[in-house]
Length: 90
Image 1 (tube, one colour):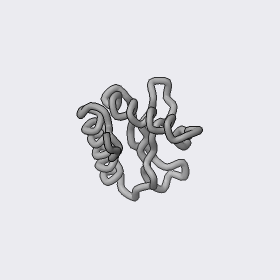
Image 2 (image 1 turned 90 degrees about the vertical axis):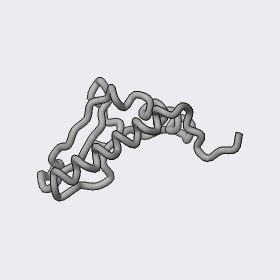
Image 3 (image 1 turned 180 degrees about the horizontal axis):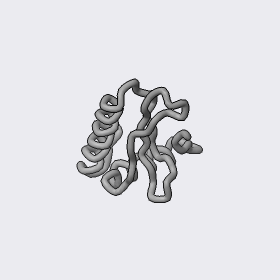
Image 4 (image 1 turned 120 degrees about the vertical axis):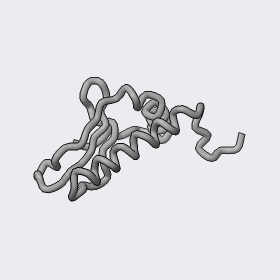
């Protein structure tokens, strides 16, 4: 199952900013691929829908877990520093 898609750039940006701000409250985990020949991670909303998924399958559980942990840490770091400026001039 893939993550959500968005109709436009602004909707996607708003959802990403919300994801960064709320990541500590979102469940997620590492799972076997649907074919069972690797590992993927998924970050879910409270109702169980996929918000973010790994871009690829990993051969090893530990490598996938490390990537998942780094992703969550990056989102938390982005979400803790106030508004994301997106490289725009103010």
